Length: 117
Ligand code: 5GP
Ligand code: ZN
Image (cartoon, rainbow, N blue to C red):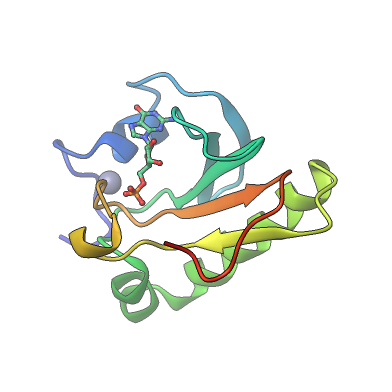
């Protein structure tokens, strides 16, 4: 069921502490940890603790959690002293989504080109 932990979901396991991660911040509804394969000096993943497939599914099922995730992005950017940064939600395999528990990538600490590849 949407929102419930999924046995086969890596990020549900990270949220539950069953898979180790470098935790950056935690709130009642969100969890932020460093990407295992960082693409920038700061590369943090921010997830809602509840399992939802992608950002559109999250916005449909639990719109308040979209705000919670985005607020955390701002808090982490401030903590990491980032003036400029990028927030990415890859959605679907063709866009590079490999983990189907919605996550925001927070990328910063270097120049970022536009358009992305
Ligand atoms: P996606 O490709 O779905 O947008 O992003 C998934 C991200 O999760 C990738 O950037 C990948 O490096 C990261 N990732 C995959 N497995 C792990 C893991 O076990 N721990 C952490 N911290 N990040 C992971
Ligand atoms: Zn999950």
